[in-house]
Image 1 (cartoon, helix red, strand yellow):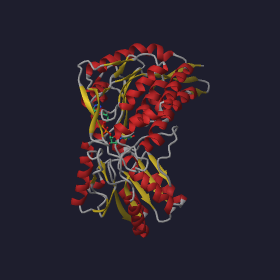
Image 2 (cartoon, helix red, strand yellow):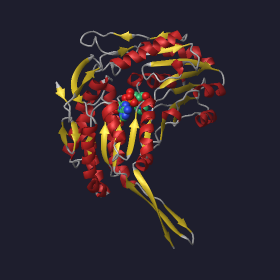
Image 3 (tube, helix red, strand yellow):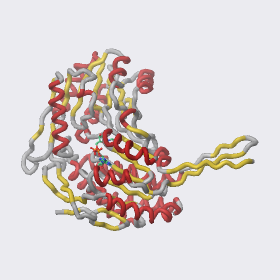
Image 4 (cartoon, helix red, strand yellow):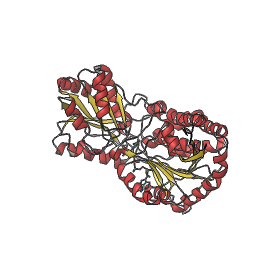
Length: 480
Ligand code: NAD
């Protein structure tokens, strides 16, 4: 059985205590590899390596750093099939999705920041007759990057690319549930000539390896994506150490559909925005609000389309819904479906675990599920489920739709469907979210700010925001 290793100081290293965790293939429910169960000692070794690498890496020319990062990007692209297979095997997502979305996006995250850094300008502020201020932006030093399991390499590279491009050295931890593509990235980093210690990848559990990154005094900033409760813990722990924090957390995104929308475009996009990656994308719209005059028409068409989605083995090209990521997560999602029924909801389609034929009969499959008849403020409509489950709720006025959309602790993303431009602007302006899509979903421009408000996070990733996060500004004034 494959035994993954940490990538520390430019080479593979076994965890100091020699302990390993089982890594499951969710499509079959079987263990397929072992990963290091690292602890504070491994994080210390990684941090020492990063500290030693920092003086040289941070003072390289921008062109030199850029070229190395471009080689990393190319290295993933050259091994596309292997990365695609690894991501699907680890996560349960359809191979087709990993090929269209996850791995190409990891490639472009690296090439985007490798070239963005060449255009990163600092500010100057001229004071007539007084002097001039200029602001330098230097890398922070050693930074920590901690990522979740839903878009493993995509979100891992979304953090490490800007961190490295700005001249920091990194101690990174992928999710223990989906470590495989980050392990392959270590191989790519070695082949690409990334200097030892610049990027260190430590595998292990959140409570041990992750916690050690958050607490290490020499790791000066932490970029974290994951659940809101974990984010709160990290903020409590790292706050008193005055670490710079970027927290990208959970969501419960509204998808607001007005009667004057382009119905066919809305319908096919809403199937994707509800169920892509088995609903395990932080940006999925899990609460669908529909103007009452088209509620029945929408419900009939949506249920018909969703009930025809093929739940199947992720490597079958006709599969639309693969496995959810773990047994524990499957049980959590099914418990929310049971809760929805207790709260008075009606299941229109799905609602059950799906048992496939052998050898996938122990995999973690859930039929895409649509529920109606629930009040907007019940637990099902308030808590993040993060699976293939959406609720439908009618509304009569813009004010009512906004009130319900904003009535959660979260504020990550929202979608609005209308052909009325003024209404689109009004809604987009008033929705509590860091990202609003009008007549679309998941259209991403890597230059734009990415992140949420309220319990969905603190800070923004993407474009200049990420380059600013990973640098420390210093203002220098010169009297004229
Ligand atoms: P999680 O919080 O359980 O884990 C995320 C990462 O943090 C993992 O690597 C984990 O090992 C680590 N971790 C766990 N406990 C830790 C601790 N005490 N200290 C340090 N690190 C710790 O989240 P998850 O279940 O892996 O991911 C799902 C969540 O991520 C959902 O809530 C989803 O909405 C959120 N998410 C948010 C975004 C976004 O951009 N806002 C994107 C993707 C996923």
